[in-house]
Image (cartoon, rainbow, N blue to C red; front, top):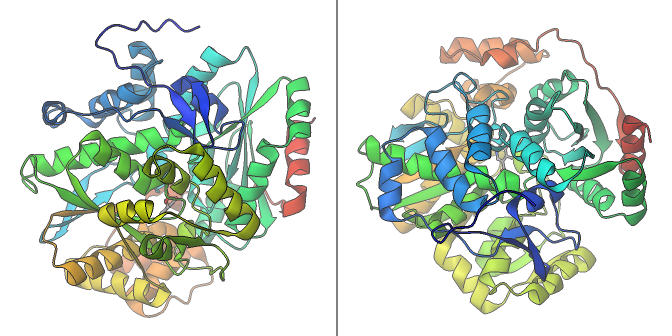
Length: 509
Ligand SMILES: *Cc1c(COP(=O)(O)O)cnc(C)c1O
């Protein structure tokens, strides 16, 4: 047992599973496990509240203090010392290329950009994956006796690198990343295949992101494999956004963005904002939903998708149907047909009915399709707006954003800006907006350069980066430039059926 003392005014949060309401575990257990043994996702039994006074107080403190406050409400079996250690380590000065960690910049009028890509790997995944290794190792101490944690990651590009960077050489952990062979940008691939660290491995898969994600999920829930792990004193966990330890840190930056917008005069304290999120696995926007439910003044949650617009259709019709063509786009981190975290939202909206969730997600597995009830559809319609745009429109938005506002946005962010414009045009809503910007444009140099210049005919990724630097007068983040000429360590490609073998080989079991 841990040493946390429950007092009268401390709010203790337990976690249950979206597929079994009988599950009741601590936050540290939820983080250690990653996914519930029944295949459901861990979710807090109730959502803690931030009062207006508490939000106001957070306006006067820095990102780390905001993180301690918000995370403290969710991770109630962490001691204050443990939480301080995690937050101070993850967001220590100099790790993020901004003193605000996640700064808000004004794009034009009342449209603002929340820059979530200032971390070590230049994508928003760093916001959570810099702290997850701390949360996980502290959690494991409470829940596991001297077992080694094996983390398997399925990535559409950015999670893999951010996890590798977060977990490299972290004692008691091993990390193995699977990415779709033809589904990541050249820079993303290079970031992963050149990764340093004695405890990490990287393997490409013949297939798309969903194949990688399904493969990892199957390994996690395979009894034989779990037994083999047990015998070797190993235990699985997850660094994907199915792990609550990924979600909770993402709530922080919405609270922080609101405070920064109050401080800069962009919004009056108490007034609402709209949030636009370029969405893939539904993690980032789910964090915004939690922030709203906690009491942060958020009006609409605007869900932006690329040509893989399964979520747009779902939010509009209440029918989730993954039986459709899969497109490889210029925003690869959103090339997803199964958005895992939607399960958490639906669980809450259907009144925490685990039977309903088993029914819908059983259908998703067997038929690739489910339809939510009219009530749930209506609740979604009240809170969310959805839109999508294809690669041509994404390029036009990059071009326009650059030429009109002198802001160089990456492909994912541009999908969100496009959908934001469409929302404002359609509704006339004048609420101040914050658009989550999820990656540095230099991670997707070729697509960004050709959008701005009309062409980008360089064979070499770094020639493209140079050209983008020249025309934009911006400097590429040093950690990307430094990849030039770096030794490639990982070249293996596997069939999706053989992913378990790759895991055994890496672990030598
Ligand atoms: C992961 C990612 C997304 C999608 O975020 P989700 O939490 O999966 O919805 C969007 N943009 C970039 C650059 C990403 O890396």
